[in-house]
Each structure stands twice: as C-alpha cells, then as structure tokens.
Length: 410
Ligand SMILES: Nc1nc2c(c(=O)[nH]1)N[C@H]1C(S)=C(S)[C@@H](COP(=O)(O)O)O[C@H]1N2
Ligand SMILES: [Mo]
Image (cartoon, rainbow, N blue to C red; front, side, top):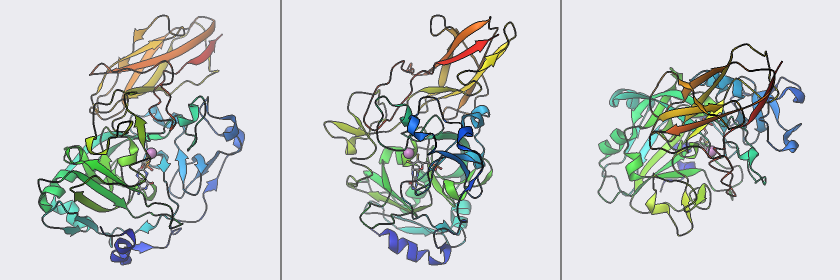
C-alpha cells in the first residue's frame, strides 16, 4: 500500500505547508451569544465559542486543533446548507492546503487490473458528471446530548449539512481501472494526517457493493461551487445515505482490495453494538460477534425555527418548521405534536430534492395562552421512525431522539 507521505511527495507541486489557509480563526461573538444546542454539557459554555475559519461564517467551535466547528441551527432553515456555514469535522491536525492544479488521485490496490492516476481535469472530462443532493451527518451528531455524557466531540444538533454534490461516480472510476472479482472493500485516504506519528492516519473503507452504488461519488463541487478547503478541496467522497465518517475529504488514494481493511478508524472506531439499531446496510467483511461499523443514518428530524423559551403570540398562527432525513429511503411522514406528545398531526412536506436530501416540513397551529411543548417525529418509506428515549451507546452515535421544545404564548 502506498503510504500517505509518498502520496504527498507525489503531489508535491500541489501542496503547501499546513496553515496556508490562513492563520487563526476570527472570534466574533461573546461566549454568551454562542447558540449552543439545549442539552449539551454545561462545561461547553465558555469553551465553545463562535468563530470563523478562513472562508467560513462564524460557526460553533468545539476544537481548533483539529478543527471541529458546528453549524448553528438557524442555517438549517434552508434545504441546502450554505457552503460557508457547512460544519467542519477533522480527526487529525495536519491539514495541508491542497492546490487543485497539482493534485493527483491514485487508483490502485490488489483488486484492480490497471492502477491509474488522475488530475482534477482528467476526472472532470474523463467521466460522466453526475449530481446528488445528500446529507452529510457525523455519526456523533448530538453526542453532546448523551445521558450519561460520553467522550468525544460534544456536538449539539449541527454536525450535519445538506448539499448538492457534483462529481463522478466512484463506480465508473473503479470499473475503468478494471475491478477483479475478488474485490471485497475499497480503501480511501486523504491528504491530512497526524501531527504525531503514533496517531493512525485517517483512512476508511467501504464494502465493494456500496463503493459501486451509483450514488457514491467522488465530488469536486458543492452547491455549484468548488469544495471549500475545510470540506475537502479539491475532491471528496460522497457516500449518500451513510454517516459522514466515510466521506473522505482531500481524497488522495482509492484502493480496491481483496481483504478486509484492518485499521484503527475501522475498528475499534466508528462501531455500534450488534443488534441495537435497525441496520439494513450491512458491512459483512468488517462485522464481529459484538460490533459492526456504523453504516446508514437513522431517520431523524430537527425543528429549525423554534428554540426552548420561544415567546409566541397567543391566538396568532405559528409555523413550526424543520428538516427530516434518513439513510436514503426517503421521508414518508412527519408528525407534529404541540401538546407534549398527546395529539399528533401530519406536517406538510416541502420540496423533494431526492431520497438522500433533507426534506423540509412545516406545521401551522394557533397557540392559546400558556406553555406548549412542540415535538416532531419523522418516519421513512421503510417504516422506521425516531425514538423517544436515547438508545444509548458509548460512542454517542445514532441519536435520533424526538425533540421536546417548550415555548410559551401570551
Ligand atoms: N480527510 C478527512 N476526511 C474526513 C474526515 C477527516 O478527519 N479527514 N472526517 C470524516 C468525518 S468523521 C465526517 S463527519 C466528515 C465531515 O465532513 P465536513 O468536515 O465536510 O463537514 O468528513 C469525513 N471525512
Ligand atoms: Mo464524523
């Protein structure tokens, strides 16, 4: 296997020293103004700040090295998350600024006939260009709401985003290299790496069936613009339906292999206990008796226009608005309760940008004076729905607990 360092050397002309993207983030607002999600650990207050990375709007900074920045909920008002508000998640702090002109993508592994190397232009002109609107959500989105609290980035509701991704099908690129029948997994590497050599490089693999899915892309554009540096410039993987961990940024190497890829980021990282979640997309070659890689996202929804303590006018129509999404079956229904879960009524579903996208929804009601507990619950086309209590796991993954937002009308 080609090492990351060799790849970096191979693309030498295209890489400049880490930090080239421009110094320290700008800190804009006082800590009190940081729009933390209700329920995240109290300790985050004063630690998390609202800061702008170069090229980004102010986002909720959980850590700077590596950069972990969460999208404030109000940006989910629109069905597509703006590029400059899209969350940023990294595991490792050595993040080079990749120059698109010098960048090369290597295709290899023991399960391809003909290894290849492509420039950005080769990819753009050598393969059919396709688009998909898809949610990229960190496995640990909402981890900060776990009870008891668990270790890891203490994300609130904003470790996710929805974008229109443009690129080429991974399948077309693999087929051009000639896949051997023994291909079992496809392994991905990106240009970022550990600062300390002991830390394992961030690499991920996919089962061959998911790598060959027509909605798995090597994307070079996001919402019609080149990928922002922080979201994987010049090219990243888009694994529609699956959690963000597989969406390798600054992609440098794609290797089809005939054996299971054994590395820290596949096991023990990013695992869920067997049998605890409704896993439909199996990753057989990575399963053990007790744990399995996290794969597709669970069905979920978010109220985007109301937060706890909202003050509404009694007797006036109030719209509850939000987004719903799942692992790619598509949302069939969103039910809303305005009385803490006694009565449920269907929300109106908005624009359908495809089964991997956020599905906007809205619900209008006229609150009488007093307190109202707003809840929303999405169901997908295979009948899966959200939970009312946390289905706990030690990594804080798959949190799709129905929100309870207490508002008052007067
Ligand atoms: N090269 C690289 N790609 C990566 C990661 C990383 O640390 N390095 N993190 C992954 C994880 S866990 C997530 S959730 C998504 C986040 O994508 P974003 O930073 O564009 O929002 O990127 C994925 N791709
Ligand atoms: Mo993630």
